[in-house]
Length: 474
Image 1: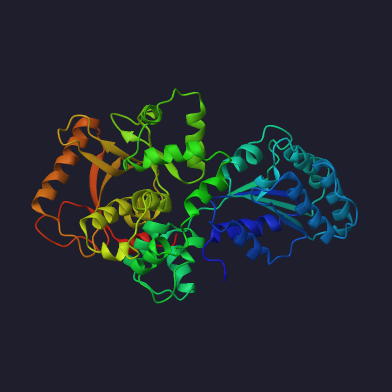
Image 2: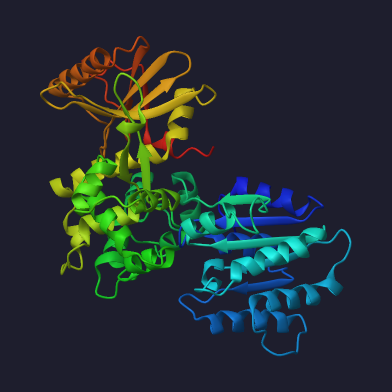
């Protein structure tokens, strides 16, 4: 299969490959997001040295993998005793292969696996780069890992021998809706955009998960087979996901459990209280790592001004949210999702998931509004005075002194605004203006799937954003 999307990343790799200087590239991103596939496909396996760490492997196993790579270069000696020895042997094997103006590509995949306790692997890697690789313009060293927080803390933000040695970092993000649609079409999976969006709500833009969808099946049938059938393919994925990212996944799973129970997000203090622990400094580290791994977002709530203390942590990974909503307890119905069609439980879920999709496609929303070249910041707002506890999930504050208040509604058809909804929306807008004291012009925007049906209550919005706008390729 060809690479879908990743246009920016491919342009970056082309630039780095042609730079005519030594390059040290750190590639990271969530498990199953397609990092290795991108590198393998771009370079078409034209690696000079290519190895991958053994998941949960011992030091001896990691060293054995490294030596196998050396033997592919013609090494016939004994197993090195230390990583310093191993990297020295690598430099010796590569030296005769260096050809002027021709890249020598070294790819080390699943890099965190090699860093077993007290192994000295990172120090040896730093020494290899500083003492040999950086002196050769032909060298292009690419390291890759799913343990995002480890990659950032130990490679990109390293304070030892690798400090400021990375020439480029590349964060591989999940697919957008557009890329998801293109990926499915490449697999001959033809679905309308509402069905694609419903799949996205459960699987997110993760290529490995999307590859499980078969041509000819509906979105609900696919979800039943993947999650709820007796031989479901995602039964162990949740635990594997966190075990692959964190060496001690337990505290992260505890925080995820707390966040999954509050769709709007919670503050750091509320997380500490729910955990029943004193903050020993680790909570902030855990939250930061969850953000780096694309599981959580940290967002601000508008008061009289945006304050750091008003920040909320919200769960954003679609698969993780789906799992914690519907799979945290055993489900015996193999057609659970299909049997829930049009139920209030499923419709509520679609509504909440559509809000998260909009948050994940802010750039597409800005493009649809024609403000993608205007400086913006976005946040949410919760009333501290309204009896009804009014809130607006998406507010786009613009440098041209205009605020877009976005009403987000999911619907399987054109959305019909009722009189009561119109009153509530107008009251929210009024409360927002009064409580924040903003002097910016307020432009209400309606975001829905198939648009807003024209009625006596639909005239209060300056613009509409539809599902098709969210599928734009930017």
